[in-house]
Length: 509
Image (cartoon, helix red, strand yellow):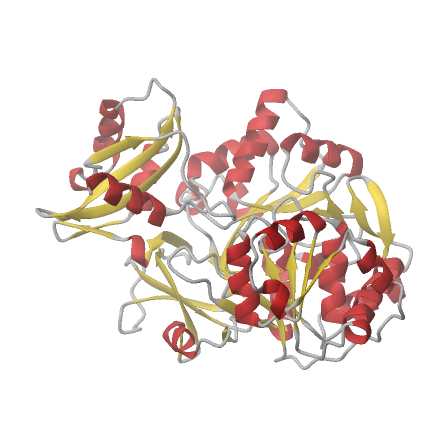
């Protein structure tokens, strides 16, 4: 079944129900959204002569055209290649070339930036700006009928962030997207017709992956007028529309909470905030709950099994009477209902509760493989299991505590040190805003611990060392400290520890 069938169904049953808003302004109802999507499909299939299975790259910031373009591409039986609008044209060029995309849908501003680079993209695919009259002319053609697709047909070709090398194309099928949608309802949250999902995070990433769930219930898709994340704008939308739902990276949650605490804004218009994509430390989520109430759900996943490995539910976060509430709040929750999750040793054998190993997962949400990369696929998918590269440990109740990426593990003097454990302690200091811990080679110890800290000027090394000595073993204490104004992050808000290691290597050089 084509995932776009969800739109066809709701448009027939509830044609006049609001579908898309630009800010608080109604842009399309569901009948109009289906019609626009069918016209996008007609432009791609009839005017541009694409065939089922061809790739269409979307390189634009969040805008109402993004909703239409994504659904229209699926409606046409084509493959969506979502590309973060903040990527450099050279990074875009690699993805377009690797996928052999037939069409690149973008904006005039981004198309101009791409043309300035004189990259081969324009020679390998048709570049069209959705805010250009040419695109409007193409959309004036006949609508295309919904194209049937098999469950195993490719639907979404998402490229990993490439923090450790060239990005790889994660192949998500229509069946994968259907399973991800079902997983939202079974484990994350219910969706009602009067809910509003606001796209404050990039639709090219996790926020876009949740679009089908809200589509299937006939809820309203809201694109902020700013096209991105602005705490004051979100608060105002929550006041005007109510029942606001969103996916947010932890850094976004912190900024939203800061705004609400500083302004005293009313948070009652927010219904659900799903956070993930990076560590949300226990003090941060406790502060968020205190400021905004029981509105939070945490998910853990990766592009290879998007948003669907574990979930820390609203109920678990709010069960403050439970004797292990603090431990649970610092975890990433329990396995999604649709998948199996294990913690295993290098041989693949499951480890007992409490022991740290690699997290592996299998189930209908796991990717079909990496695009035209059989070696990487074979290394990551083994006997039906996705090896995530993340290190974690289950407790006796089935809650998964993530330690780190396997590549981030520090081995100092023969002892394992998990950076997140040290980061959790340092963030207990009230004036420490962000921290990242990495290991660097050392002739005596093999590796030593280095902490990069974003903090107020009153924070001292002595105070942080004392904090470490009060909470963790002495050997885990950072040997070097770097106070910085900000941590380097990729376009999805994840800290680039590779960049931090390169900084240290350059300074030692």
